[in-house]
Length: 303
Image 1 (cartoon, rainbow, N blue to C red):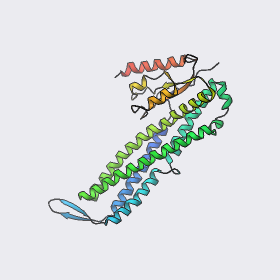
Image 2: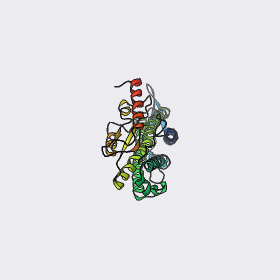
Image 3: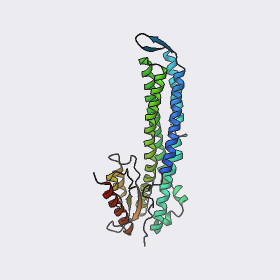
């Protein structure tokens, strides 16, 4: 007989990734600060001539070819700092892949408890992690994070270069340009923070859905995913409303693919064996989650 799914005990952080998010955000901040310093150092190598007519202005004297060379060197530094290559993608290696592995391990443990068929084909976690389907999925995750870091690096270079060259064209002087570079770095840090808050949790959720789908297809196990909302003060009403309800893997994926549902989301899922009618074998935990969601809605109100 199938046993009840294992659920997280801390609904405020059901994915258990809050600490890793904070670490990633701190690392992003440090690396973007390195990028800012690189552009500030470039600025220090340029030649200006102060010109005063009605107001103080600065004329840019550095040859365009020299500026282009400096920008090219700085561009390479930014790629290095942000890990915009397949080998040194620190964010994928240090945060996203471990989260994916953690989610896979949670599903392995959960399905192993509920399904003897699954336990027989995946007797150890190592047997899952070394399997061909898992390794193929890791390849896709790495490719996604590589493109993401390339995009972040390109954005940082584009915006910082814009601030630099616009300041040169306007003749506002090195001190003011430096202030603009600092302000732009702050904007890029906020974007990086959103990446950290989104990608780590998304990797964990995706891992659970991927392994659930693989088990269902490979072994013909009747299994659905139980949506679990964080039910925190910042939880979106639409996210809280799903908590404690069962969905197919496809339904859960489709929901995350629209309306920015994956962005800054702390929700997770748990696997639940269901009967021929699609109803959970164990309903007690489902009821518990639904009651918690109802209490949250009563306290926080609905839109």
